Length: 149
Image 1 (cartoon, rainbow, N blue to C red):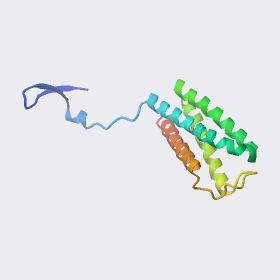
Image 2: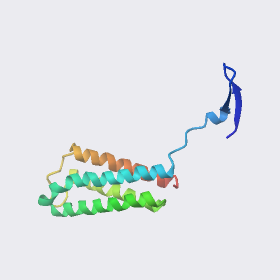
Image 3: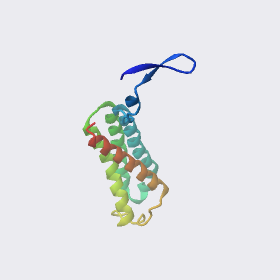
Image 4: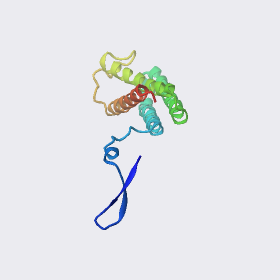
């Protein structure tokens, strides 16, 4: 970056960037910031399923155990994102996002085995929060994978 000097109205010299350099677009977020955001989103997916897990224990036990696997996996993937800068970490984060996203869409449209109660229940508050976090995490993962970072 090249700097020049200018005098302002009070006669004080100031450093200024050239006009071409001032017009540069802002750079995208850094890899470390993206990894931190990704880890928070992955933990958000886990948190949503912690909040919903207790209600599934009595009705559909297999969903409860799937939630526990997702929660454990989300903690592991968050740690990987925080400590390892690799495309594989973003692939794992995308997996944490896309699995429950597909399961949510499936459960609301045709129903999951043993759990037909949620068919048509598209506006569940916790479900909407899950969709937001999962789709945001998926978008971040796709962008980071697409830019080769």
